[in-house]
Image (cartoon, rainbow, N blue to C red):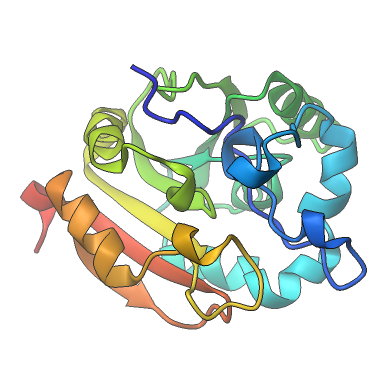
Length: 231
């Protein structure tokens, strides 16, 4: 059962910037772009790192504020589901509170890049994980699942997120960051969802909204918990 058909490599969507050609404006999560750009594979991590880790991204992605808002407790574990070349993985790993960051991606090139980057930066709490199209392949349940700019790529979302709960501790949270309808960048309109649409789908998968943050200029930032843990 390929829950993530049409995806490959759990990588971030990145907007390269005004100097990038239009075909690069929206890069696909999970290792490939949207159907109209299916020829663009994410098998050259070194090349894509120039876009994924472009310092200009910080101005609108606000990674430090995102991590602060996640309010992780000491010793907690996180899966960066869509790790790409490690934009959020590295920042999470350097947080004194995070015990382990599982950097999951289904593109072998990205996983290899993450492994080398973690070694180079001496990040012993990063565990690169080669995921498959229908499972994360995590060996341990986590306290937080972070999914950035990948939600809209998942076709069978209700089924997928029901399965994802098996990788989460009973008290775990799910953080979704994805493109706003009015963002000047990102995927085509049909690939953008309102918070209400996301909430309806995740509700069917057994999640409920616990927090909504509006400080990201281009993306929704929604935090969910499982129904049994709400309140």
